[in-house]
Each structure stands twice: as C-alpha cells, then as structure tokens.
Length: 264
Image (cartoon, rainbow, N blue to C red; front, top):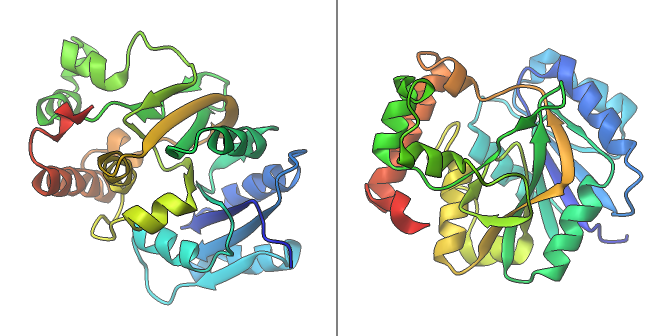
C-alpha cells in the first residue's frame, strides 16, 4: 500500500449537515497529494458515520461510545494514521479550495524547520477570516471578553490580532486548529495535543510547545479554505463553549506563566 503524503483527521460532533460539503470539496480537489481520511465520530447518533461509510468507504471511522474533547479525539485520530509525512486537522465545517493540500505540503517540504502551517481561511461570503495570531496576554483577553476592543483597540490588542500585517506568507505565533497541517516528525519530538483542554486552546498550546522546541509556525495564504462557523466560545461567552474557552485560557497561563504572551 502506498503511504499517503498527508493523513487528514476530522472530528465530527453534530455536523451532519455540514460534513457532506466538507467531504465533497475534499474529494473534488485537483491536488496531486495522496491522502487518507480518519473520521472521529464524537456523536454516533447523528448518522454521520453511516453516511460517510456508505459514500466514502475508504475513510477510516472511529465511533466514540462517550463524548470526548477535541484534543482527545484528534490525538486518537492521529494514532490511527499511516506513516505519512504530514497530518492535517480539518474541521467538518471547512470547505476546501483547489491547491489547499499541495501548497501546504510544498511549503513544509521547502521549510524543514516549519512544524505547523495553516491556509488562509475565508468566511462564506469570501471575506478574510483571521486564523493566525500572536500569543495573547491576559489583559488583552480581558479587553476582548468585555468587548472593549470593539471601541478601543489598544496596542496589545492590535499586536495580538496582527493588525497591519495583511495576508502574506509569514512566520506567526499560532494558528487555529480549524485547518492546520503539522509535520509528523515535529509531533514525534514535541508530543500530541494536550488532552486537558476539552475545547479551544489546544491549538495555541501545541504551537507554543512547537516554538519552545525550536520549530516554527507559519501562515501560507496561497492555500485557502472556507470556514463556515466561527468559534462559539467567542460568539457566546456564557455558553458551554465559552466556559471551555475561559478554562482553557486559565490552564494555558498556569502552564506556561502569565507572561507567556511575551514569548513571540
């Protein structure tokens, strides 16, 4: 059996209506990269796994008997992958655009010190969706949580959001896990995602650890995808996802120090 260039791990949780579009776009890519897909079905009752099995029989499916966090699901999916050079974490609400795989792989092939790369994400209307950041500081997150940044963007907020740094191929501090490609060799040296995060912050934590170990993180805007849903924890701060966002932040700063945002 030929070893694929990239193993794609998709975690499903009540995304039955979105995942059809994701898979259709993925399998319609004209990219030359060979890939395998591992679906972690976190909600077996929504029928997604059965639909995928019927329409995409080559997909490896793992059905959870209990609900697990994103990091735990992603790690389990990575553990079931072949010996590909790269792993792509892909949200089920992402629509792939031609060149996505080939351009991310080409960048990693040409930059051996790069551990993680992300494409430029877009909203469904085509607008650029920010998916790269500088490491945050607690004060910046407080301003955003209180929505003060909508009225006044402090220098710290502008730095965190990378204002003035338009879409370009660049080294960044961290990228969101909605669409994130990682070098397998980097995983082997740094380790998997931290499963103590249930939802959110596991991507930031991973990028932070990669950079601590001497690897780099990049955005490659020539690779593009559409991300349909935003981060619920940002849009609904008092929801379960919002509480996970808060607890994740506390864990991150307790783990790396309250001045971790100065590491950039």
